[in-house]
Length: 272
Ligand SMILES: NC(=O)c1ccc[n+]([C@@H]2O[C@H](COP(=O)([O-])OP(=O)(O)OC[C@H]3O[C@@H](n4cnc5c(N)ncnc54)[C@H](OP(=O)(O)O)[C@@H]3O)[C@@H](O)[C@H]2O)c1
Image (cartoon, rainbow, N blue to C red; front, side, top):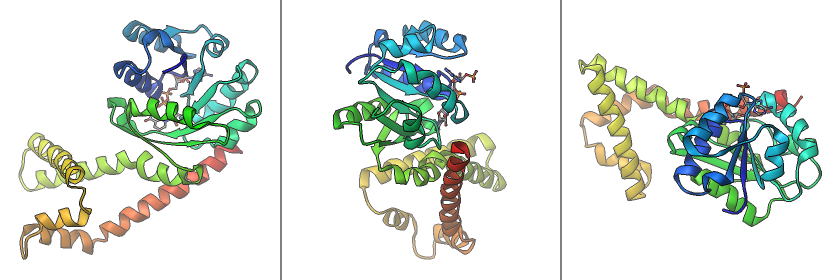
């Protein structure tokens, strides 16, 4: 990858990205720079990965061609205010702040800066993230390719139009929480039926991982894979009947709809 990538904020997400791009060899450590108000966080990363630590934002901006902003949404206004006057022309800005729109960032930076907005999710912490990216009209295809490759270093990455970002937040952004709730419920169900908790946990985890692998390999519709397990009058159809009667399918759709609507509401609140 060309140039230096600079990270503003090295908390959970900044750290995961640095780890991913270092392990994947996307940028050599001397081409990765970081600045965090908590100096100890970026210094720790420098010790582990050999990346550069900048003493302030000005230094980071003067050496970086790609700038990843990984601070909390409530710190975005302050960070954008600070970087506004030091931004070099030709820099690509990438923001992972949830609910911060491209327009919010554009309004606080000099005119015509290329900006990519990203919604990653927590499995990025173990390099299995799902990230969705949207760009403003100043981002070239080559710059977008650069942004996608950065997030592919911590999992998979897709490009969408910004209007889908709230829905993506409700689906893949919040998604890990839905999955963990399902995993927990299934484990409890095993315990209810007398299976020791540790064993129930392992059975649930490997059943989910195995099912995902099967779905990936076969590329069939999920319903066909479900039918493979569901013999006439058998155990599975009895379990599924209870789920359908309880309205599990509709509940999941409603959950994603509410999360999407909440993402839109929060964006309005943050941007006020
Ligand atoms: N974690 C996730 O899985 C996830 C998923 C999707 C999106 N995101 C987004 O990723 C962003 C970062 O989340 P996170 O969980 O990594 O947060 P985090 O752990 O709090 O990390 C942010 C870091 O940035 C530092 N910081 C704050 N203001 C700064 C400034 N002006 N200059 C430089 N550094 C500054 C913070 O220091 P202090 O602690 O002292 O404030 C902290 O060390 C958020 O906007 C979030 O919406 C995260």
